Figure (tube, rainbow, N blue to C red):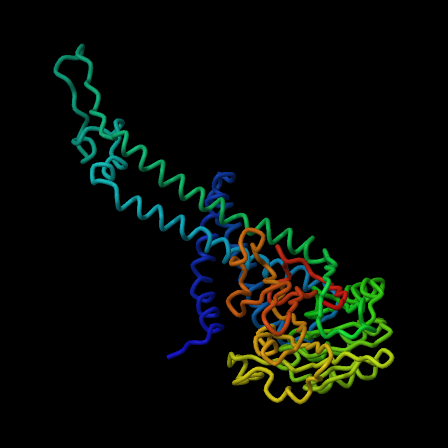
Length: 447
């Protein structure tokens, strides 16, 4: 039986969530007792923290779902949503980092000989057996004779084993605390640190008139309280200053609330390009059932959303061909919305032979099929570049690699090229780390 990847991810997070919360609550309690000597005050603060946690959990899980998503940063989002989401993301990730250290300490414990284990409980300062069992202390018949000291039972090996396990555990907790600081940095700074990536794309079939043609790509805006309409207008102004000939929008304008579509379109209405603004839709337009309505709203702003359509961009007698498709996937997620057996089925008649074909497809997994069909360039998003990733250490340390081999950047295979944009907004947690938001600028040249 084949189990979908997304179900494995969700199940793994649920299994990890409760142990992670208990683990970090215990660590916080231990830390508090080191600085607060009063047991009563510790219990009071612990009870208050538990009540606050339950309130924030309930607010984020249930109450906020019944409210329209704001497109500005509200006090409720800043005080109740952002801190809780930061805590959940950091605590789960930190716990996963601590877990191997804890398992290693258990392995060392099992390998110790019995004498080392008993040495941890009995030390040279232990009282005589009669006193430990409740009897009176032994007295010497000769008061002048000094009382012999108890034999030293703790061996050097026992000392070493105990300190080694303690070191491993403390190192694990220290490493597990790093995500809290990293996520805080990602939420405060990297979330708004928009980078501009310049990429030269060589296309063998590019007409002479389009040599040096400039395309700017925006993706995954996810308008909401943490990617506000005001911030998106700032992104649009940055894009205009790059003076693109054409602007490509590759989906996910909304997040979970279809009612934000008007604000998303309005925030992008200031975009300008002499050859026009074109785009495709993402999975969140599909899941929120606003594909048709947001397409109409964009049309009123002279933005053409390509839905299994093409558009010829002409310069004199030359032309390049733009193609766009709705979100497609091989995973039956959200009741199978967007599921297809074969990517890009039925798109062959839209391909224009003899010139460069550029595909807008939100999901980068369509690239393999696009290359087979001879589509010269695919522009995609969807992955957020991993959003919270350690890609600078290893490309494998990216959560997006669970759903696609095409996580971020430029790829090539026989028949075509692909660029995966990191996007502007966020999903689930308002944090970016190792994957800052991105505007991409492509300069097309003849190969």
